[in-house]
Length: 333
Image (tube, rainbow, N blue to C red; front, side, top):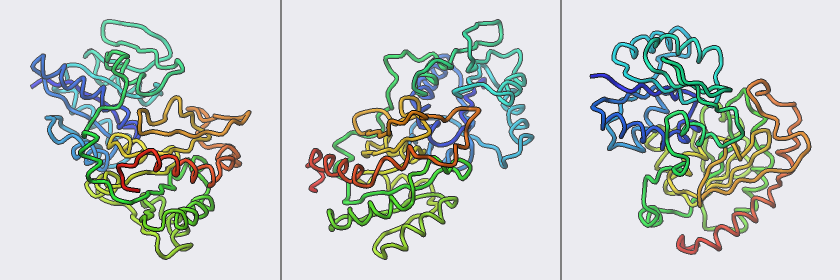
């Protein structure tokens, strides 16, 4: 069977922002008698997708290792049954462009700094200043009016399953550690939460690359609960049952947003207007500094002194949580 091929291999946050465009392509492909294959970054992203959307007949695959050759071999295999190809990336780099050449002359939709429709390539202008969800929607042809997160669960269903859990998510990819809210701030916030909400469980959640900062936070209070590198099903369950997630610019915040769990997301180098969770459950905070937001494709690793993150204090976050809990009385808080 011929298939639509979707390349969405930039990590869990981008995958979450791609869900609605991907589901749109699923219905398009099904209507036209084709299947759909989704290429993601790793097994974890694949498992997250399958657990969030178990009722969609979408094949998910991922490279067995991080080597470029492994990815190229996988793309060559995908080419055999490809009908149309969509690169759901926010910008095009040399690796993306070279990968797209593998599919020639099959129709390919690519992110670009220009808009140009050729016989085999549709270049979609994603350089304009809009949210990634809108960029990914443009690449797949989804109408701008539908640029909101998909609704996986009904609000009532989720409310019944909420527990008195507050999740702290201190991590980020190691090479982008400047996107992290300082560990000392998480420690101070946990102490305030312990005093203000003594009946709540405080959970510190992250991946294996976050282990060091998670251990430092938990060493300050033996009653803190930590989860490191959970399997996808457990990861979703913990977030789904919690009433709020406090995080930097991470994929965890976007998973929580898709699960209708409240998020308070702290932004500094990155711009919440481009990468922030969207919708009624999302609260994005950003300090106003002259030098930020500074993150870009050519400036990923920060200045070494992210004052933008320091200016959002534990007191600010605590007050946001208090306001949230007062508004959401259905959580019995």
